[in-house]
Length: 378
Ligand SMILES: Nc1ncnc2c1ncn2[C@@H]1O[C@H](COP(=O)(O)OP(=O)(O)OP(=O)(O)O)[C@@H](O)[C@H]1O
Ligand SMILES: [Mg+2]
Image 1: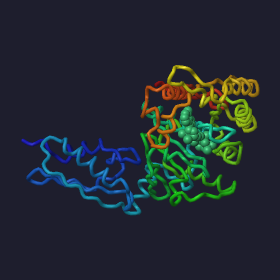
Image 2: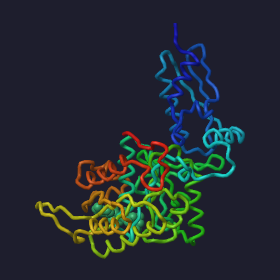
Image 3: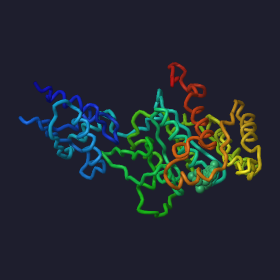
Image 4: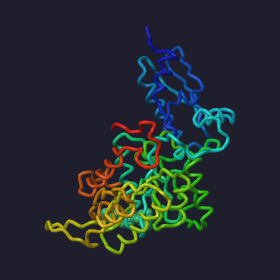
């Protein structure tokens, strides 16, 4: 006797996740119907959230694969339909609650998401490279990770994460594309080609607010914000929008860069944000003959950490030193971060160590409610 039944098919479908929302399609009201014919062929109808859903092939594949594993299943046909407005509203309510106005989940008391804003004084010191590699390293540990490209003018995160997918929209929620298991949102996804974005402070603030409130991030363990260089409008907006965000300062070993990095860190004093630590990038280059070349000098990272420690009156550690390696740049340009592309290289190892420190650190030290235990055991 065949074990094929509607419930066995449904139970197989409960293991299929929507690629964007990352929840089982059975919980999202996406399974329209299941029909089993006399010859054990299975017809499944699936509701997509939007007609232009870029994930239609992916969803069809996932459904087909899952049902093919059900003992006794014959031919499988998947038909796609699109949710009605009412169904989309229901979905939004089930994901988001009933609130009319979008709120920034990371700014709510009791939010368990750790938010790190990656900042530097000077441009080109490697903020984006570090953000992306740390994000991917954290995601490969099984954490749920998001990256918000807050560099509105100089966005680079989507390229570095290897996807030019556009976000889809369900009602007022924006579904972030995913690259190497990291959810990401960037102004690059909302502009045509390489059009430059010319916005003033208030518009930047509004864009950031939307990225934080209107994007469906789901339950993130960690959100990384890739900031533009300097101590400008965006850094202040971040402080206003997510006061609990902590600053990760990036510098090169160069003294001049270090002084500017220190100023970028010192802004945290004014905004009362916590500085989680300093990462020194481009620390040295290992030459083929085994010698080490300090291209940008040495000591900048430690100097920034020491001076910020003094300035804020709390330990600001040097979290890591990342060597200069061609593979870091190639990984960024090619969309395969070095922690995945060359995981055994010295730079990848150093980047992973930084990620480990950010992952295991306890929350609740500065300005946070200590009433709840927010320590994560990894
Ligand atoms: N450790 C490294 N080894 C080799 N190349 C690196 C390293 N870190 C960064 N790069 C390269 O240096 C350039 C600048 O890095 P990145 O874009 O990450 O800096 P940024 O601080 O985000 O710059 P911006 O201020 O423009 O946003 C990129 O081409 C990147 O690939
Ligand atoms: Mg950058």
